[in-house]
Structures are given as C-alpha cells and as structure tokens.
Image (cartoon, rainbow, N blue to C red; front, top):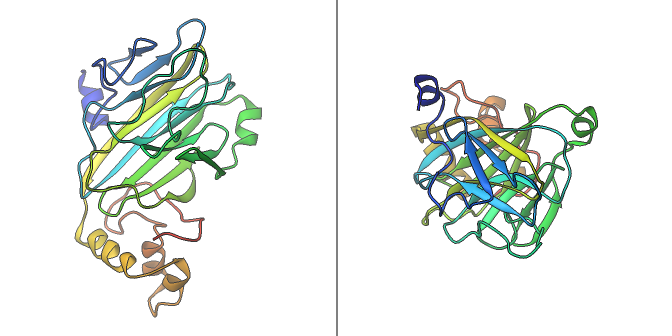
Length: 245
C-alpha cells in the first residue's frame, strides 16, 4: 500500500477468499469493494483481514455512492461465522440475518438476528442523490456498537456484542455494480477514562440512571457515549436510544 493509505487506515478489506468472495472486486489498495460487477444474483459481503482487537476502541467510515436500490448496502461487524455470500438469487441481507452480525443499511434501518428496526433518517440524503457516508464505532471493551450517517450521530444501536470472541468489520450489498469505499479506519487502546466509563456503565441499568448522577454535564455526556474520550479529538457518537446495558 502507498504511504497515504498506510497513514489513513489501521486496516483495509481482506483479499483472501474467506474475506471477499468472487462476486466482490477489491480496488484502490483494497479500500474499495465493488459488488456484483454486472448482474447481481444475491448478496455478497466483504470483511477485514483480521479481527478487531479486544479491549480497544475501533472506528471506521465508509462511503456509498448512488444510485441506491436493492435490499441492502450495509456496514457493520460480524463473527467469523457470519455468511459471506448467498446462493441462488437470495437477496436477503447478509449482515444482521442471524446472531453472527450487526449492521446498518443505507435506508437507515439496523439489523441483527433477522430483526430490523428503524434507526437513522436517510430519506433526504437518498433523495438528493449525494454520497452517503457511514461511520462505525465499536467499543470492544464493553461490546457497544454505534453509527453516524453523513456526520450526524445516531447513538448506540446495539449492546451485548460478544467481547470474548473474534469480531470483524464487514460490509455487504445486494445491488449490481454497487461499491462501498473505506474512507478511514483506526484502532486505539481504551484509555483509563474509557475503562472507568465501562465499569460505571456495567453497574447501571439504563441511561436515566446516568442522568440522575450528581456529576457535571460534560461527565454525564461522556458516560452517555456522546463523546468517545474527553482527552482525544475523535468523532462524536451521540446516544439517542434508551437502554444501553
């Protein structure tokens, strides 16, 4: 990879057959995945070449370009058991179809274990025919997954992502000639403040208990995952959902 790629990415999409099936073509130093070059006959996925390290914070951002159509153009995380390709004109999304993956779709819905929920509002973006950028924040210390769409933070999407098994970054698409480009990726050891936050959060049942704590508002925001780490200039991830643990 070139110097700029190495500086911008902690990892890129994996090039081995287990990481990218034949219906996925990797380009631009393995940062861009082209799905179904021609006619799509199902859903295909791509993942990182190695699992995201445990007890660390991970962030990656992808860009999706119009036109947007089909059942899925998704990004998220999954275990090594997550399916990477469907067979026989099966267009069901791969990410979130079972208990092995968690993700967000271009239409703003999130999926896990076959259950789809509304999460982010992407209607205006899709109507504008502008590119869609999705940021993924995974707290591998506490098993919390959050997303942001075109710079807007939508908060915690999933809790309880297993922290004692290997978790990989993933993307998938059902649309012919569609692409998902990795814009950046980084991983950092959880700071002492983030470890303290994780310990505190495991003792609380929901966000309302955070709001009742006798703490300054900036510390409450930190406990609500409205900021990743007070000591670092990293993307904000705002909590908009009620139950976190």
